[in-house]
Image (cartoon, rainbow, N blue to C red; front, side, top):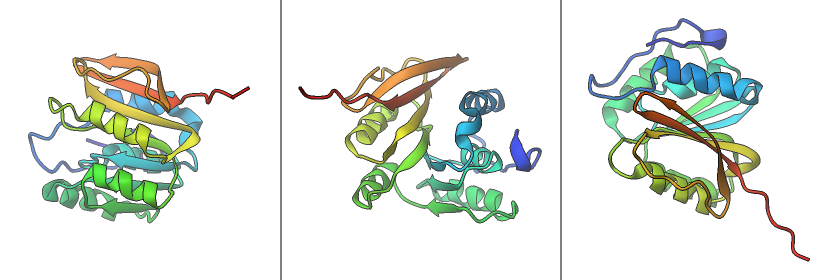
Length: 187
């Protein structure tokens, strides 16, 4: 695996485990093609970060800051190895469970422009994560939530605060893009 775009293009990335399911190159490239200039300067949160390929791609494309959330020790070691040789400092590795970090960030009133998550498949974590994000106010008003998930996972098109606006299929993977739902004004 390599960084595909931006100032770090071509730099190699390590994987922690042979059975880890990283975001495939074509999927990662498509995500960043869709995001375009929205990444520049963005506050970017990567949940279930694994080796950090997506967050590192965001840094390469000019993200202002990236928070990597991962709780697997081997994945954290690979993530830190990947970050250490890049000559960048605008990131933080948070070695905790994604759900506790979502609550922690909400308690700190943190806001993110882009939240990307690629939870393990077959555990209903995509839906659980989306609902957790929707209930915690950590997405900026014009922010995006991007979920990479198994094509058979059932996740809602709408929550109280988030709405699906784009979905792309790559083999057995779906990438679902959510944005804040417009608030209804009271009369």
